[in-house]
Length: 368
Image 1: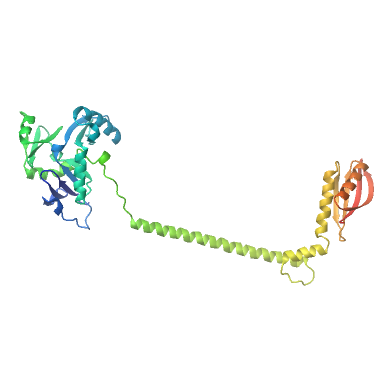
Image 2: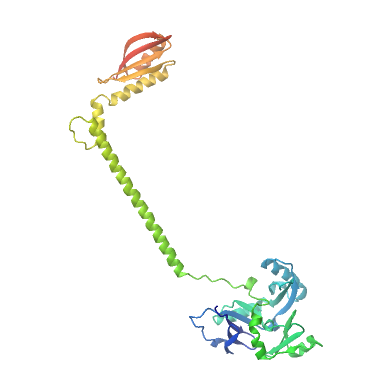
Protein backbone atom coordinates (compact mmCIF):
# COMPACT_ATOMS: atom_id res chain seq x y z
CA UNK A 1 0.00 0.00 0.00
CA UNK A 2 1.50 3.38 -1.05
CA UNK A 3 2.00 6.04 1.60
CA UNK A 4 0.01 9.28 1.67
CA UNK A 5 2.23 12.25 0.71
CA UNK A 6 1.17 15.79 1.54
CA UNK A 7 2.80 19.22 1.35
CA UNK A 8 1.25 21.92 3.55
CA UNK A 9 1.89 25.56 2.60
CA UNK A 10 1.08 28.12 5.33
CA UNK A 11 0.46 31.71 4.19
CA UNK A 12 -0.28 34.75 6.33
CA UNK A 13 1.45 36.22 9.35
CA UNK A 14 3.62 33.15 9.97
CA UNK A 15 4.39 31.47 6.65
CA UNK A 16 6.00 28.06 6.47
CA UNK A 17 5.67 24.58 5.09
CA UNK A 18 5.51 20.95 6.20
CA UNK A 19 5.97 17.76 4.24
CA UNK A 20 4.04 14.76 5.59
CA UNK A 21 4.40 11.07 4.83
CA UNK A 22 1.33 9.32 6.21
CA UNK A 23 1.21 10.52 9.83
CA UNK A 24 4.82 11.71 10.12
CA UNK A 25 6.26 15.15 9.39
CA UNK A 26 9.47 14.44 7.47
CA UNK A 27 10.48 17.99 6.46
CA UNK A 28 9.60 21.52 7.51
CA UNK A 29 10.68 25.09 6.97
CA UNK A 30 9.75 28.73 7.44
CA UNK A 31 10.65 30.07 3.97
CA UNK A 32 8.21 29.14 1.25
CA UNK A 33 10.75 29.87 -1.46
CA UNK A 34 13.20 27.27 -0.11
CA UNK A 35 11.04 24.15 -0.38
CA UNK A 36 13.26 21.32 -1.70
CA UNK A 37 11.84 19.62 -4.80
CA UNK A 38 10.22 16.24 -4.43
CA UNK A 39 12.15 13.16 -5.53
CA UNK A 40 11.16 12.42 -9.14
CA UNK A 41 10.84 8.71 -8.36
CA UNK A 42 8.31 9.29 -5.58
CA UNK A 43 4.56 9.37 -5.95
CA UNK A 44 3.26 12.96 -6.48
CA UNK A 45 2.31 14.67 -3.24
CA UNK A 46 -0.95 16.50 -2.54
CA UNK A 47 -0.39 20.23 -2.07
CA UNK A 48 -2.65 21.83 0.56
CA UNK A 49 -2.72 25.59 1.04
CA UNK A 50 -3.45 26.59 4.65
CA UNK A 51 -4.87 30.12 4.92
CA UNK A 52 -5.36 32.31 8.01
CA UNK A 53 -8.55 31.56 9.87
CA UNK A 54 -8.90 35.24 10.74
CA UNK A 55 -9.76 35.97 7.07
CA UNK A 56 -12.64 33.48 6.98
CA UNK A 57 -16.04 33.08 8.60
CA UNK A 58 -17.10 29.51 9.38
CA UNK A 59 -20.71 28.44 9.96
CA UNK A 60 -22.65 25.18 10.16
CA UNK A 61 -25.80 24.97 8.07
CA UNK A 62 -28.47 22.35 7.37
CA UNK A 63 -29.23 21.41 3.76
CA UNK A 64 -31.52 18.78 2.25
CA UNK A 65 -29.98 15.44 1.34
CA UNK A 66 -28.74 14.42 -2.11
CA UNK A 67 -28.17 17.95 -3.43
CA UNK A 68 -25.87 18.35 -6.39
CA UNK A 69 -22.75 20.49 -5.71
CA UNK A 70 -24.19 23.43 -7.67
CA UNK A 71 -27.50 23.17 -5.78
CA UNK A 72 -25.72 23.02 -2.43
CA UNK A 73 -23.62 26.07 -3.33
CA UNK A 74 -26.73 28.01 -4.40
CA UNK A 75 -28.57 27.18 -1.17
CA UNK A 76 -25.50 28.09 0.91
CA UNK A 77 -25.21 31.49 -0.81
CA UNK A 78 -28.79 32.25 0.14
CA UNK A 79 -28.00 31.42 3.77
CA UNK A 80 -24.74 33.39 3.61
CA UNK A 81 -26.68 36.54 2.81
CA UNK A 82 -28.22 36.35 6.30
CA UNK A 83 -24.91 36.06 8.18
CA UNK A 84 -22.50 38.19 6.15
CA UNK A 85 -22.26 41.97 5.94
CA UNK A 86 -20.27 41.82 2.69
CA UNK A 87 -22.06 41.74 -0.68
CA UNK A 88 -22.42 38.27 -2.11
CA UNK A 89 -21.01 39.22 -5.49
CA UNK A 90 -17.55 39.69 -3.90
CA UNK A 91 -17.80 36.71 -1.53
CA UNK A 92 -16.67 33.13 -2.07
CA UNK A 93 -18.92 30.53 -0.42
CA UNK A 94 -17.56 27.01 0.08
CA UNK A 95 -19.68 24.11 1.34
CA UNK A 96 -18.19 21.01 2.93
CA UNK A 97 -19.55 17.47 2.67
CA UNK A 98 -22.51 16.34 4.72
CA UNK A 99 -21.66 14.94 8.11
CA UNK A 100 -22.43 11.24 8.36
CA UNK A 101 -25.93 10.60 9.67
CA UNK A 102 -26.72 14.32 9.84
CA UNK A 103 -27.98 17.11 7.59
CA UNK A 104 -25.29 19.62 8.60
CA UNK A 105 -22.53 21.00 6.40
CA UNK A 106 -19.64 23.31 7.16
CA UNK A 107 -19.89 26.60 5.24
CA UNK A 108 -16.84 28.88 4.86
CA UNK A 109 -17.06 32.48 3.70
CA UNK A 110 -14.05 34.40 2.38
CA UNK A 111 -13.54 37.45 0.18
CA UNK A 112 -12.82 36.74 -3.48
CA UNK A 113 -9.84 39.10 -3.36
CA UNK A 114 -8.21 37.04 -0.60
CA UNK A 115 -8.66 33.80 -2.53
CA UNK A 116 -7.03 35.38 -5.59
CA UNK A 117 -4.17 36.67 -3.44
CA UNK A 118 -3.47 33.31 -1.79
CA UNK A 119 -3.66 31.26 -4.97
CA UNK A 120 -1.48 33.75 -6.83
CA UNK A 121 1.14 33.55 -4.08
CA UNK A 122 1.19 29.74 -4.21
CA UNK A 123 1.34 29.64 -8.01
CA UNK A 124 4.20 32.15 -7.99
CA UNK A 125 6.13 29.57 -5.96
CA UNK A 126 5.38 26.91 -8.60
CA UNK A 127 2.54 25.15 -6.76
CA UNK A 128 -1.09 24.68 -7.76
CA UNK A 129 -2.79 23.61 -4.52
CA UNK A 130 -5.33 20.82 -4.73
CA UNK A 131 -7.03 21.95 -1.50
CA UNK A 132 -7.36 25.26 0.36
CA UNK A 133 -8.36 25.06 4.03
CA UNK A 134 -8.63 27.60 6.87
CA UNK A 135 -6.08 27.04 9.64
CA UNK A 136 -8.77 26.95 12.32
CA UNK A 137 -10.22 23.77 10.72
CA UNK A 138 -6.88 21.99 11.22
CA UNK A 139 -7.59 21.73 14.93
CA UNK A 140 -9.32 18.42 15.67
CA UNK A 141 -12.39 19.18 17.83
CA UNK A 142 -12.94 17.45 21.16
CA UNK A 143 -16.00 15.30 21.76
CA UNK A 144 -17.34 18.04 24.06
CA UNK A 145 -16.44 21.64 24.68
CA UNK A 146 -13.73 23.58 22.89
CA UNK A 147 -10.08 23.13 22.00
CA UNK A 148 -7.68 25.99 21.26
CA UNK A 149 -4.27 26.26 19.63
CA UNK A 150 -2.28 29.47 19.44
CA UNK A 151 -0.13 30.12 16.34
CA UNK A 152 1.35 33.40 15.07
CA UNK A 153 -0.37 35.25 17.92
CA UNK A 154 -3.81 34.02 16.86
CA UNK A 155 -6.05 31.75 18.88
CA UNK A 156 -7.62 28.99 16.75
CA UNK A 157 -10.75 27.79 18.55
CA UNK A 158 -12.46 24.57 17.56
CA UNK A 159 -15.55 22.75 18.72
CA UNK A 160 -17.77 20.12 17.12
CA UNK A 161 -19.87 22.84 15.51
CA UNK A 162 -17.70 25.90 16.07
CA UNK A 163 -14.48 27.13 14.46
CA UNK A 164 -12.94 30.59 14.45
CA UNK A 165 -9.59 32.36 14.76
CA UNK A 166 -9.19 35.64 16.65
CA UNK A 167 -6.76 37.50 18.90
CA UNK A 168 -6.36 35.91 22.37
CA UNK A 169 -8.16 38.76 24.18
CA UNK A 170 -11.17 38.51 21.87
CA UNK A 171 -11.13 34.74 22.13
CA UNK A 172 -11.60 34.98 25.91
CA UNK A 173 -14.68 37.12 25.38
CA UNK A 174 -16.16 34.77 22.80
CA UNK A 175 -15.47 31.65 24.85
CA UNK A 176 -16.96 33.17 28.00
CA UNK A 177 -17.25 30.81 30.94
CA UNK A 178 -16.27 27.73 28.92
CA UNK A 179 -12.95 26.20 29.80
CA UNK A 180 -11.34 25.25 26.48
CA UNK A 181 -8.66 22.58 26.25
CA UNK A 182 -5.38 24.19 25.24
CA UNK A 183 -2.93 22.16 23.13
CA UNK A 184 0.65 22.91 22.20
CA UNK A 185 2.42 22.65 18.85
CA UNK A 186 3.40 19.00 19.30
CA UNK A 187 -0.15 17.90 20.02
CA UNK A 188 -1.45 19.97 17.10
CA UNK A 189 1.07 18.48 14.68
CA UNK A 190 0.37 14.97 15.88
CA UNK A 191 -3.32 15.45 15.12
CA UNK A 192 -2.80 17.05 11.68
CA UNK A 193 -3.36 13.81 9.68
CA UNK A 194 -6.73 13.32 11.39
CA UNK A 195 -7.73 16.91 10.60
CA UNK A 196 -6.73 16.49 6.93
CA UNK A 197 -8.56 13.23 6.31
CA UNK A 198 -11.28 14.06 5.61
CA UNK A 199 -11.34 17.84 5.22
CA UNK A 200 -14.34 19.46 6.86
CA UNK A 201 -14.45 22.05 4.07
CA UNK A 202 -12.34 22.86 1.03
CA UNK A 203 -12.21 26.39 -0.40
CA UNK A 204 -10.95 25.06 -3.75
CA UNK A 205 -14.36 24.77 -5.34
CA UNK A 206 -16.83 26.71 -7.46
CA UNK A 207 -15.15 29.54 -9.34
CA UNK A 208 -11.86 28.71 -7.58
CA UNK A 209 -11.96 25.03 -8.45
CA UNK A 210 -8.71 23.60 -9.70
CA UNK A 211 -8.55 23.49 -13.48
CA UNK A 212 -7.68 20.09 -14.88
CA UNK A 213 -4.39 20.03 -16.75
CA UNK A 214 -4.23 17.86 -19.80
CA UNK A 215 -1.22 15.64 -19.99
CA UNK A 216 -0.12 13.80 -23.07
CA UNK A 217 -0.06 10.07 -22.42
CA UNK A 218 2.81 9.15 -24.74
CA UNK A 219 2.50 5.37 -24.26
CA UNK A 220 -1.17 5.67 -25.25
CA UNK A 221 -0.22 7.86 -28.22
CA UNK A 222 2.28 5.23 -29.36
CA UNK A 223 -0.28 2.46 -29.01
CA UNK A 224 -2.84 4.45 -30.99
CA UNK A 225 -0.24 5.21 -33.67
CA UNK A 226 0.65 1.53 -33.97
CA UNK A 227 -3.02 0.62 -34.10
CA UNK A 228 -3.62 3.22 -36.82
CA UNK A 229 -0.64 1.93 -38.83
CA UNK A 230 -1.93 -1.62 -38.49
CA UNK A 231 -5.42 -0.59 -39.67
CA UNK A 232 -3.86 1.26 -42.63
CA UNK A 233 -1.76 -1.78 -43.51
CA UNK A 234 -4.79 -4.07 -43.36
CA UNK A 235 -6.76 -1.63 -45.55
CA UNK A 236 -3.96 -1.57 -48.12
CA UNK A 237 -3.74 -5.37 -48.10
CA UNK A 238 -7.50 -5.60 -48.67
CA UNK A 239 -7.25 -3.17 -51.61
CA UNK A 240 -4.31 -5.09 -53.09
CA UNK A 241 -6.22 -8.35 -52.70
CA UNK A 242 -9.26 -6.87 -54.48
CA UNK A 243 -7.08 -5.50 -57.29
CA UNK A 244 -5.43 -8.88 -57.76
CA UNK A 245 -8.80 -10.63 -57.69
CA UNK A 246 -10.27 -8.25 -60.28
CA UNK A 247 -7.18 -8.72 -62.44
CA UNK A 248 -7.44 -12.50 -62.26
CA UNK A 249 -11.19 -12.35 -63.04
CA UNK A 250 -10.57 -10.07 -66.02
CA UNK A 251 -7.92 -12.44 -67.35
CA UNK A 252 -10.32 -15.36 -66.91
CA UNK A 253 -13.06 -13.48 -68.80
CA UNK A 254 -10.65 -12.71 -71.64
CA UNK A 255 -9.66 -16.36 -71.86
CA UNK A 256 -13.32 -17.39 -71.83
CA UNK A 257 -14.15 -14.89 -74.62
CA UNK A 258 -11.25 -16.20 -76.69
CA UNK A 259 -12.46 -19.78 -76.22
CA UNK A 260 -16.00 -18.83 -77.31
CA UNK A 261 -14.64 -16.96 -80.33
CA UNK A 262 -12.48 -19.93 -81.27
CA UNK A 263 -15.61 -22.11 -81.31
CA UNK A 264 -17.36 -19.72 -83.74
CA UNK A 265 -14.58 -18.50 -86.02
CA UNK A 266 -13.89 -20.84 -88.92
CA UNK A 267 -10.69 -22.73 -89.59
CA UNK A 268 -7.59 -22.00 -87.60
CA UNK A 269 -8.03 -18.23 -87.31
CA UNK A 270 -5.86 -16.82 -84.53
CA UNK A 271 -8.01 -15.11 -81.90
CA UNK A 272 -6.43 -11.77 -80.97
CA UNK A 273 -9.45 -9.44 -80.53
CA UNK A 274 -12.48 -11.66 -79.81
CA UNK A 275 -15.12 -8.88 -79.84
CA UNK A 276 -14.01 -7.31 -83.13
CA UNK A 277 -13.51 -10.70 -84.83
CA UNK A 278 -16.95 -11.94 -83.75
CA UNK A 279 -18.61 -8.74 -84.98
CA UNK A 280 -16.93 -9.16 -88.36
CA UNK A 281 -17.99 -12.81 -88.52
CA UNK A 282 -21.59 -11.81 -87.72
CA UNK A 283 -21.63 -9.41 -90.62
CA UNK A 284 -20.25 -12.10 -92.90
CA UNK A 285 -23.12 -14.50 -92.08
CA UNK A 286 -25.77 -11.79 -92.43
CA UNK A 287 -26.28 -10.90 -88.80
CA UNK A 288 -24.77 -7.48 -89.05
CA UNK A 289 -26.41 -4.11 -89.15
CA UNK A 290 -29.10 -5.33 -91.67
CA UNK A 291 -30.71 -7.47 -89.01
CA UNK A 292 -31.00 -4.60 -86.56
CA UNK A 293 -32.57 -2.26 -89.12
CA UNK A 294 -35.11 -4.83 -90.39
CA UNK A 295 -36.14 -6.06 -86.96
CA UNK A 296 -36.55 -2.47 -85.71
CA UNK A 297 -38.83 -1.67 -88.69
CA UNK A 298 -40.93 -4.82 -88.14
CA UNK A 299 -41.43 -4.18 -84.43
CA UNK A 300 -42.31 -0.53 -85.07
CA UNK A 301 -44.93 -1.46 -87.70
CA UNK A 302 -46.52 -4.06 -85.36
CA UNK A 303 -46.78 -1.50 -82.54
CA UNK A 304 -48.33 1.11 -84.81
CA UNK A 305 -50.97 -1.22 -86.36
CA UNK A 306 -53.87 -1.98 -84.04
CA UNK A 307 -54.81 -5.67 -83.64
CA UNK A 308 -51.69 -7.10 -85.31
CA UNK A 309 -49.31 -9.53 -83.69
CA UNK A 310 -46.02 -11.02 -84.79
CA UNK A 311 -46.23 -14.84 -84.83
CA UNK A 312 -42.80 -15.73 -86.23
CA UNK A 313 -39.55 -14.15 -87.34
CA UNK A 314 -36.72 -15.95 -89.17
CA UNK A 315 -33.55 -14.24 -90.35
CA UNK A 316 -32.21 -15.87 -93.50
CA UNK A 317 -28.61 -16.20 -94.64
CA UNK A 318 -29.19 -13.87 -97.61
CA UNK A 319 -29.89 -10.92 -95.29
CA UNK A 320 -33.68 -11.09 -95.51
CA UNK A 321 -36.29 -11.84 -92.85
CA UNK A 322 -39.32 -14.14 -93.10
CA UNK A 323 -42.14 -12.96 -90.83
CA UNK A 324 -45.70 -14.13 -90.14
CA UNK A 325 -48.25 -11.58 -88.91
CA UNK A 326 -51.82 -12.13 -87.68
CA UNK A 327 -54.45 -9.38 -87.96
CA UNK A 328 -58.23 -9.02 -87.53
CA UNK A 329 -58.71 -8.52 -91.29
CA UNK A 330 -57.18 -7.64 -94.65
CA UNK A 331 -57.38 -3.90 -93.93
CA UNK A 332 -55.09 -4.28 -90.96
CA UNK A 333 -52.59 -6.35 -92.97
CA UNK A 334 -52.58 -3.68 -95.67
CA UNK A 335 -51.96 -0.98 -93.05
CA UNK A 336 -49.14 -3.10 -91.61
CA UNK A 337 -47.44 -3.36 -95.04
CA UNK A 338 -47.72 0.40 -95.56
CA UNK A 339 -46.24 1.23 -92.16
CA UNK A 340 -43.42 -1.29 -92.71
CA UNK A 341 -42.61 0.50 -95.99
CA UNK A 342 -42.70 3.86 -94.17
CA UNK A 343 -40.07 2.51 -91.78
CA UNK A 344 -37.74 2.09 -94.77
CA UNK A 345 -38.01 -1.69 -95.28
CA UNK A 346 -38.72 -3.49 -98.60
CA UNK A 347 -41.76 -5.78 -98.21
CA UNK A 348 -42.61 -8.75 -100.47
CA UNK A 349 -46.09 -10.16 -99.59
CA UNK A 350 -46.53 -13.93 -99.54
CA UNK A 351 -49.45 -16.20 -98.76
CA UNK A 352 -52.44 -14.73 -96.90
CA UNK A 353 -54.80 -17.23 -95.29
CA UNK A 354 -57.70 -17.32 -92.86
CA UNK A 355 -57.25 -18.98 -89.49
CA UNK A 356 -59.90 -18.88 -86.76
CA UNK A 357 -61.47 -15.68 -87.96
CA UNK A 358 -58.11 -13.85 -88.28
CA UNK A 359 -56.05 -13.08 -91.36
CA UNK A 360 -52.53 -14.57 -91.41
CA UNK A 361 -50.01 -12.93 -93.72
CA UNK A 362 -46.54 -14.08 -94.63
CA UNK A 363 -43.94 -11.53 -95.76
CA UNK A 364 -40.32 -11.32 -96.83
CA UNK A 365 -38.66 -8.17 -95.55
CA UNK A 366 -35.24 -6.90 -96.66
CA UNK A 367 -33.20 -3.83 -95.98
CA UNK A 368 -33.23 -1.10 -98.64
